[in-house]
Each structure stands twice: as structure tokens, then as C-alpha cells.
Image (cartoon, rainbow, N blue to C red; front, side, top):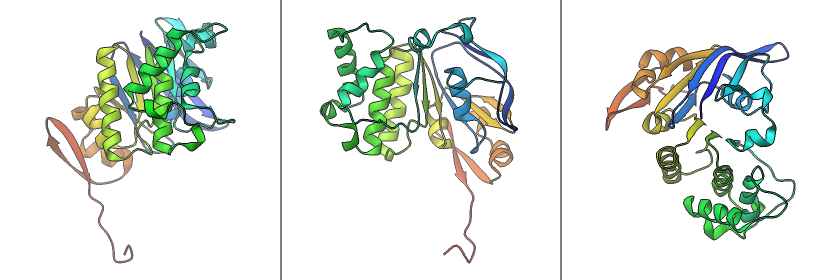
Length: 260
């Protein structure tokens, strides 16, 4: 499925978040969006998912304006995993993941729906949590549950807002490896907001850097992770080294005598 953004713009009241965003996602890969706080990373994904309505421009899925696509039909092809989610009523993990079947199901839950949920719980390594209530989970466990729910939608495009937040280093690596593998095995496009520059550099096929209300740069990790770009966008000095063919960012932030 092809996603195309043409001259997209969004603002809150008088605060312009971004403008003139032009972007084409037309192949199954892992694309990470990076940028400083307030640069519009999450807002951009919510415009693609019709949670927010842009003030200008258009979002197209396979050349169809999403304004013409109903929410249920949109959910059949676009999955969204927010950074934060809260359940009004605590449900079991299985019931939470089964909510991802909503766009595809009729009145009753079928064996096929249950099998999708079970398969994705296993994929995330959390099948042992299936009967636990959501309010009994750690933040990291709940993050994995939400990813499983997103996958259970059978999306052609899966968008995740900070999928590695609240996860320890080992689980961050597991999740990013899984996302990258899914793009190959299931041929889906995955768009992920990522604050960790090195996680993005290590696993992304493509990186989009947002800054100053626009796409500042777009390309491979080597294209984007440069000393100049990091200094311009984040205002910090860094050193770039290469590990296994991928750039690794070392931030040069010293301590002054008051920091201790």
C-alpha cells in the first residue's frame, strides 16, 4: 500500500506544527521519524490516521484521499499504536488484543479472530500474559500488548509512537528486530516515532528527520546521522562512529563543576 503526503500542514490554534510536508512511502520497510520535542512526529502520524485533520494538503492511500475513506475501512489497512494508552476498564490481555480485530469482525468473535490474537501474543513473547488484566502489567508489558493489538488488525501500514519506550535495552532490541522482520515477512510498511537516535540508526531502512516545521532531511541512516545534522537539529555536539556498517552517535556533553 502506498502512502503519499502532499503539502501537508497542521497547527494548534496559532502554533504551526509543520507545513509543506511531502512524503511518499511505497515499499515495505521500517521508517523511523526522529526530531526534537515539539517537531510534530506524533502529530504527523495522527494526520495519516485521521485522528487529526490537517489544515492544508492531502493524505492519500493508494491514490485515494483519506477524507473519502471511512474510519472502519481505514482501520483495515492502517494500524496505530500510540505511545500512551489508558483503558477505562481493565480487560484481559486477550480481550485487549482482540480489539484489533474490530475492523474485520462481525457480531461474534470467530476462531480465526482468536487465532490471530494468539499468534501475535506468541510473536511478542507474551502469550503467558493472555489472562492477566491490563492494570496488572508493567509499562513495558503493556507496550507489547498494544503492539500485538496493532498487528492483529492485519494492517498494510503499521504506525507506532515510540515503540521502545518503557522497555529495557534487551526488549528494545527484540522489538526493533521484530518490526524490521515483519516488513520482510508480512510485506508491511512500518512507520515508527523514535527518540533514540542509535536505535533508529541501527534498525531503520529509512529515517525522516523533522525540524523547523518541515522535513529537514530524509534518507538512510548514513545520510541522516551526521555531525552537522545533529548539531543543527538538536543543538548538541557529537561524534559519529561506524559499527557494523551503521552510524553510531556519541553525544559530547561534558559536566561542569555544578553538575555533580
